[in-house]
Length: 113
Ligand SMILES: [Zn+2]
Image (cartoon, rainbow, N blue to C red):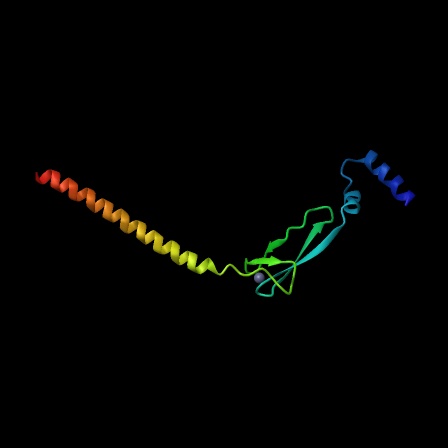
């Protein structure tokens, strides 16, 4: 539209903001994401923006994909990872205790001698 160009030229000259023009120039499209829990999230992206393949579901925090029929699998390792981390923490504590015990034993032996 020729009239649009004339208005745009006037806007640029009139002020630096150009809010309306920017809204026109950057149309948005909405992308739907679905997580394995069936939550649907719609995210608006500028058409020239790169649309990520996955999106974190704002409701459950699980990864959501654009295919409603096959959402990305939930990270099932999460609870096990936490448990493993707990076990590892305990084990390293035990190791630390063992090392401390060894050091104390050496110290006692040295003192005893
Ligand atoms: Zn979800």
